[in-house]
Image (cartoon, rainbow, N blue to C red):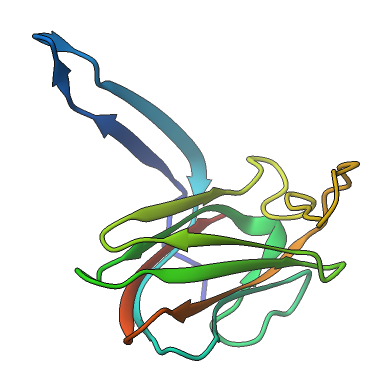
Length: 156
């Protein structure tokens, strides 16, 4: 059976709105990502123990995972109104970086527009000599109580 899905363009709009001293200081930026044929949107519950929320593989990913070369855009939003979560990103060399995602906030990880999440991440405890590696997974842990995260992933 042939697919009936036609590639489409994902439009991401980031806007800030604030007026200080009577002057609008906000901005709006639009990114268009063409040839998207796959999206995944889901809500996951993150406990106070570390859990994998997204995984990527070079080929033949496990169910619920993504082909790393196809991923173009990842958004993770903390839907909790009280607690933060820690997101940890790991690459193929087991280098990791972590970010705190506070209540109500979103984190966007943009894949390379030509190569997905291949060679997009490096981390070190010392000053970097940058050598990007493939993103292999993202884990999350809630600080004091379980939190819901909304995940949105788009790829080709």
